[in-house]
Image: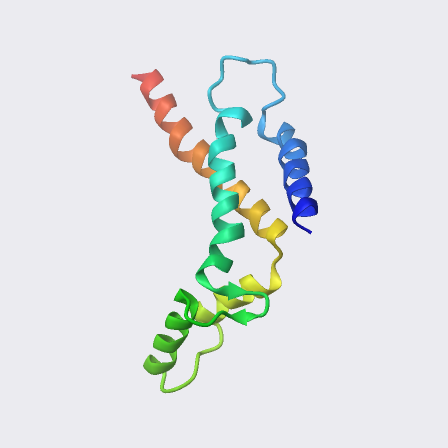
Length: 129
């Protein structure tokens, strides 16, 4: 399963690289896919492994984890039950419903957008000055 997930993630990164202008002939552009790759890897890793590491797993909330502490606090604040649509319920739904590959793909996309909107915009502002 792990190998299939990594193959799907790498395939996604390679196939989606053309839509983000990485296939252009401009080799001096510092905002291409290769410069955004570290951001994509970090974003994908945080989402794919962050939720299970916090305790939001496919089998439910793990005992003695950050997720169980959040669930306990949520239940105390709300009079004994975890509210539907709340933070804990939403994170558990993501951890249980989305697979590692889907979370990694979303995280990679977020990482790419962070690179384009923050890092590249700062470089473009410096060039204009």
